[in-house]
Length: 111
Image (cartoon, rainbow, N blue to C red; front, side, top):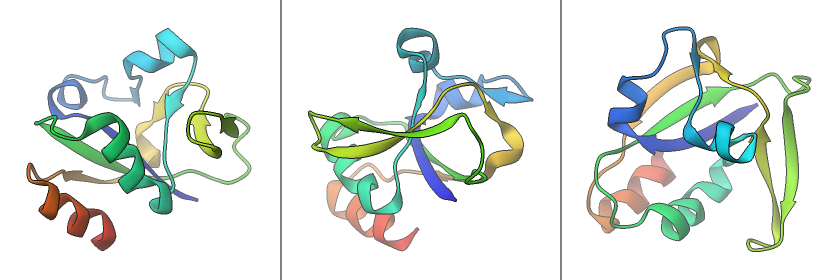
């Protein structure tokens, strides 16, 4: 299943070689992910006007028990959460996110 994770480029670059564990894993117990359809809304809600971001493109097996779609009342939808560190083998692409909003919209639709 193709999913996406937005993160700070510098944090991604300093991550462990075998797995990726963003701050949210320790703070909330999971890694925040988005489907392609949710990606732009995620960026607009949490990351708009924040420079130095990158988008990890993931291919996570649908039967991976650490992947759960949880209902998030603030978004009124189910969002994918990954309940352990992300194995690097699931990361199939890394794309820097453009700085300007009009470029970001085209970027996400082009993924």
